[in-house]
Image (cartoon, rainbow, N blue to C red; front, top):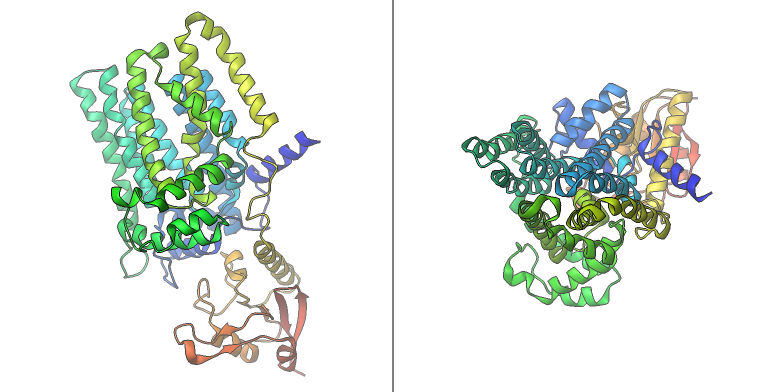
Length: 511
């Protein structure tokens, strides 16, 4: 029974199901941005996001006639690339058994499987950033112009998706010069240049796909802003020691050696290591850490392999350490590191086997299978536990609101204005159901109030009867409006579907 449950979970994550629900933290903003990038229209573009992922999602969503389906396709393909990148990285570092074990272990982390349905850009970050790292270490192991250029292209696309993934790609560039250890020729010096050439896709895509006239913030500006957000998160983690240590920390601060030596950073590291990382490491923290250190052994690759492993650990580990010291990591921030976390233990096992000579060659296969069985049975990553998103009542309410709207529109097509703040209009894209311009990000209380009287017969409105809506968000003193049932009934609206936090109403014909 447990096996069937796990197959169902993976199938639900990786297989296309149709336009039911959109998942992933902040999906509404990403989907709205996707429509704006695809159509070149700015109706509230979130400038904290780079446009390349939106172009990918919007292009696929338009082709399929559903942004919900487009999000699943983009995320599923992305997580498939993550598995392949883990296999390549493990193979380059320690051999075929390490590559195969890395690929097999990665989907056993439930958040990696669930990410295959997220409509945000974290799966794409994981795919492109992980591919850049894997291709870079592969190029260091087998110097090839094609590997260098492909790694740079993946890194450039990662940069175009998100600046954090771009930093992963920039650090991956440091691995490519190690190709000189395998092929000390003048032509090998061109490989880092080819990788860097591919990286130029990042800024080019941001400029080419930019929406609106206002410039996008720089990565430094984003990090400064995010520091204040991270400090607020410390008060929401039910960790008294973390909250006390970070109280009074200055917001808007950039990482520095002095800041990383303060008690807040120390407690941040403890919190992330104890409470966050265990959910993302398929073999558990202790076993992973123990095997990861073995990757420095020479094995069959000799001292060159040890040098590559040391560079890999530095390139992947130092940025991760900085994150662990600076932010109480949400799970979505760790998914882009899936390749790194999945490869550590298998690479160490492969290098240990290579150092034992012929005996190691006999034992590496059974040992890899034993580790895979251990990950399945012991389940250190707790793949049976629901994620916070799956437990969210708000997410369930949004899915139900979208389902109600789809049922009503299927029965009788009509204009629909979403005044519930449940992102119904966004979930229905590319179908536009409201008057132009579409309300994809800003809930306009004045337009919603006017819709009650100007909407044609048969029109729909989605409202939250429990939540007042500001008439003008830019004018706090303008007042609020509450869409109570009695008010809608008095204006000729009849209920279609009523839920605890959202209701769908249709305007009846005039008497």
